View 1 (tube, rainbow, N blue to C red):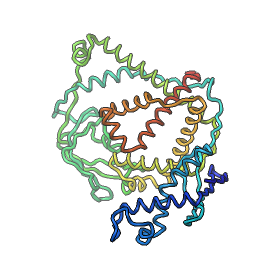
View 2: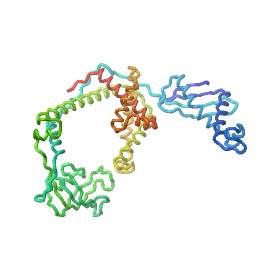
View 3: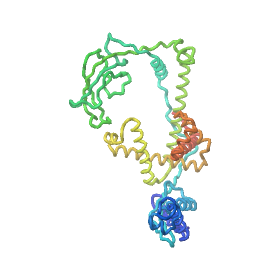
View 4: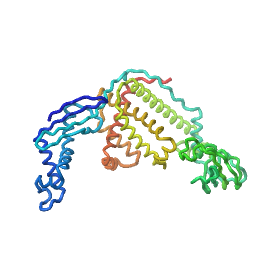
Length: 430
């Protein structure tokens, strides 16, 4: 096999490949025999028809196509190995000239990984804003615990207050027309933790039982249903029940019931330990992020648009899956946000992800950082715990999708490089 290499723009190399006629004929004959195994030809058992009979029944071009499909992976593998090419996607054929008895000529193009020039990535000092635990964090934690163990009591002798849970009927209208799915009977709503549109829950405060009333709100401009976005609406409401939360008192007896504590002070000490650990984790993650961002910003790499486009396509698919999980469709998102707004944002994310990945791979190569079987096993164990599936079952499921294995390996490499950078640079909290 003879090859001629021509470097082109955007990290593309053109490869002219010439396969000796004898090898090309072998490819062809082998392909004809494989095809003969799967077709019925009158007068012959499967696999026993001679080549000329197979050609008469299916044609030379199909045989050539089968021959190329089988031979090209080995041919390209040899070209890549001999030239030490670092390809980022499958090679593709630009043209070929396949005549039986003559040398097989193939013109292919390979897209190579862009070269990364690292800037400073060791021995740096990076300033990072220190995380400050909110002053009310302790009280909020205690309040949350008390809320978890609160009881609900129905009240009938007063109007609603902002901390109540209510059961009510509502019926919504925009421009006098009923809103589709904009009504409900005996709907339960926690007024202090409402996910309704802004201003809705607030207008349900200071309302009596049984009285019918209207509230006026405006749908947000970015509301997912475009026909409702920015529109004023009227909701006819009636409160059927008012419930108030009764919190337990924070006493030694209470904390003994909810955890391994004997006193309130022990509970507070445990919460403080958690808050301190949380602060340390946030400072660590922010430090790792700041160091990595500085390393990436100082690296120079000329990324071809095709890499960004492929990554964008991947992000679009991930975005569609997230939408589906939330009960929305891609079409609804496009209608609400605009196609260009979504794709332009995803393209920016894609460009960042591609550069990050290239820089990580370059550092890993320079520092000989690799993913061991133990590293990969740790990622599998982490995934199995997350989805509560035993590791062996997880492996069987993932084996059906090799791309997931590659993604896990890349995650493990990312984490090892991130740790390397954190260990070899200094984060100064300010």
